[in-house]
Length: 153
Image (cartoon, rainbow, N blue to C red; front, side, top):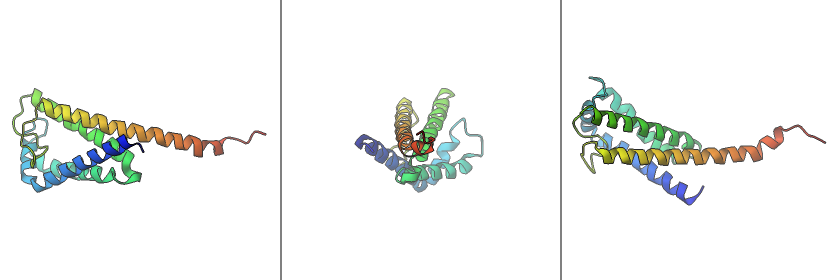
């Protein structure tokens, strides 16, 4: 693994772990933030909060576990795409309230900067996933495929 991949992995893992722990510590505030999203159906916020927090924590842990890294990176990309779409639609449709991202650091409204941050994290997660995908393919080609070819002699 390249040093840049390690740095991205560490950054994303810490962001997802911190975000999940922060939402747990401010659970009521996170549920209220979800209620302010126009795209979240009325009454769903308490039921969405737990899976969102759990997935964020699992992504953070999964990025540290070698066997789970690729799936965790892809899940992180999907989550960031969903978060970005929800944030963008909320802004577009005139939603109010805080974004629910980072209670300890900021209680900001989901603005263009939040969308840009999400898109950057989405790109980093996809870059990790793609990097590991190509590494796995290279290992398969050198280790497994030569054994599968018929012996020509």
